[in-house]
Length: 144
Image: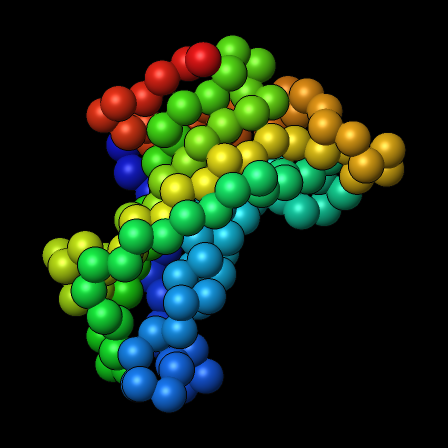
């Protein structure tokens, strides 16, 4: 897949007292994009629940570039930056753009898969691996 983006509408409740997007909303946008991608690729929350597997985040970092305000149009993409050979650990990036072409933030996350029953790190099932393989890659994509 070449690209995957989600368009997002800014709600009044997404703003902080300075009338721009609250910092935590950027992270919510990234999570929304990730789960939408996985669902669209067949790894829906229902499937993950059935297989007792789910994504877990170790680190999440945002670099803020431009303010987003109420009325701006926003889209978020997803990119796989690195992963190990079995896709059990990975780093993803989200670029958040406003008004079509203004890069407003970059979110980087490090994560893995957890067995939701045992509460221990696990290897993902075939369906989750197949979904991760479809994620567009960064130009510096690396298998570790």
